[in-house]
Image 1 (cartoon, rainbow, N blue to C red):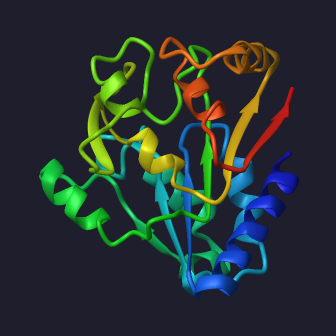
Image 2: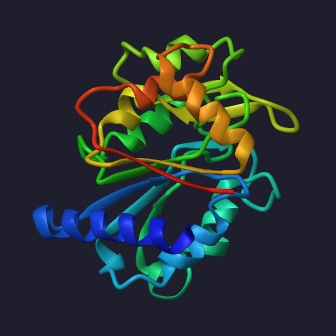
Length: 214
């Protein structure tokens, strides 16, 4: 799975660099992507032309074990891949307005977005029972980033909105385990805010891939 996903993402990044001289990759945190990160870090890519950012982040400093940025730096930004630009979502003391201003430099379309999924159907930090769920799924402000309440042990989160994540040339769902496969099957039936990931799976006009293993 890690090698196949790495090959798919690497191809998207190379195509992006060939088409417009740079490529932008959005990745997700948690435990699942570590092997994929390690595989991708060894891919033959002109990493100096790649910008990487997270789909979401917990509002903790990077030395926290709960930091998604820490995982990216530890597993992906290694070897040749260390030449990539890493755009952090969370900076201590920074306002949401300032963070959105920083992200304004991003291209209109990402080259690849790799999303994970929880057993409750959440993706990024868009949770079924979050007060910010609908604002994240159906954002009308045009701002890429918003604060969202997530699950313990760190409830304060930052997440890219669904419209911003869907502005990509390639959308990839990366999941493992039989339980998540069953949730994925439910999400494929219809789009419902009760399973936020379904909003992405049923979005039109976006090329989608699913990578799964037990």
